[in-house]
Amino acid sequence: MVDTHCHLYDEAFDTDRDEAVSRAVAAGVDMMLLPGIDSASHSRQETLASSYPQYFRQMMGLHPTSVNDSFEDELAIVQEKLFAPAADYVGVGEIGLDLYWDKTYLEQQREVLKRQIRWARELGLPVCLHVRKAYNELFALLRDLNYGTYSGVMHCFGGSVQEAHRAVEMGFHIGIGGVVTFKNATLATVAAAVPLERILLETDAPYLAPVPYRGKRNESAYIPVIAEKIAALKGVSIAEVDEVTSASATVLFGL
Image (cartoon, rainbow, N blue to C red; front, side, top):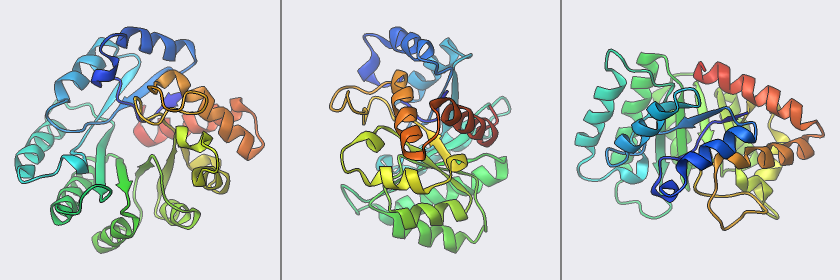
């Protein structure tokens, strides 16, 4: 299985990071993708990826909640890393729009996102989009860019079924994580409605652990729990969910 989005380099794993990797592999998760956040975490991300090159691949991008008055400096670092001669990133991310906490930097977030989407297209890489309370703004931005179809994933999808279908029509995959197991979760309805071929498994560890671990630290070893829920919603086997989602991740990210 592939965990297409996790932050095992986060400080939450400082006491048992090696064990968390071992648990994931033992659970059948043999590839984990590490998205970039900002320059404060790059070294941690790179150290983890280089320690286990057989299990981790990296993305690079500036997270929308890290966009502030110094965004040009942060973007310059991202650009340098993405376009370095020896760069080996599988995607540009996580990037996007986040209006959950604050709308102060909305215009800056828009500019940062547009620039990073352009870089992804120049490099032939998929994008990993973080969207929170901003689907209308995101779709408007994508429409303005007028690229037609896109390559990427809407990570930790939090929109409606209609918005999921719209994303799929634009070429995106839908990232499904632990929230799909929550009681009365809209994400379960979305997962049931979206074609399995367009679903990617993810944890967003250490955040959003699935039931029965809800409220605790999430980790990549819980991917099978998410796969099991999707299998139940789709009326297929866990093996089929594994096979189809892993194939989709492999193709999208060039694994």
